[in-house]
Image 1 (cartoon, rainbow, N blue to C red):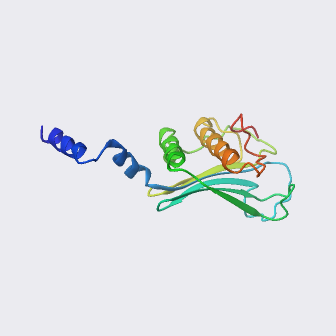
Image 2 (cartoon, one colour; image 1 turned 135 degrees about the vertical axis):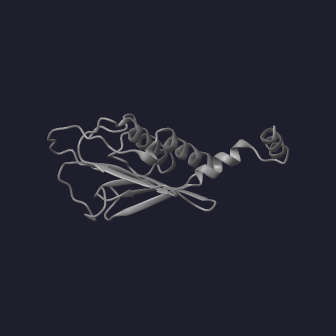
Image 3 (spheres, rainbow, N blue to C red; image 1 turned 30 degrees about the vertical axis):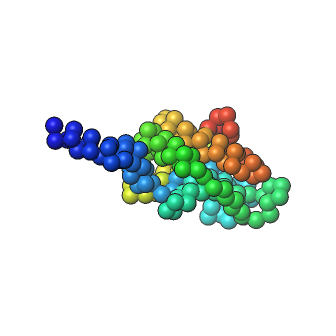
Length: 175
């Protein structure tokens, strides 16, 4: 009964479930996916992936960043382009991270040898962080693929002038 009264008081004072959800989502400050194909390629900076898509927030500022580390038309050096993200875009990304269990995800690589696969991975930073990378097909690819697809869709929508080659728009991962 006491809990019910407290909940009713909080609702009457303008506190709602969205505030509780927002508090949990603020635990994540950066979400990134990155990919480098397995074929030999020229990278501007060999310490960085061929492409990376990052969503991040700092206070009330939400931003999407696409990094390109390979030569292509109009790009002669490592470059980053950014666009504003809406609070709704950010909320959807964080909800996807939580729904897919990506804060606790570990890749389960297929056994055997694979040639020319490349590297794929993601990084989630916040109160709880998780950074994973793999260079072979993984059995449990659905969760990271969903994140890659969502970030690639956002990048293509928010930054249409940047060609994204290594994150296909219709299939999240097909190395």
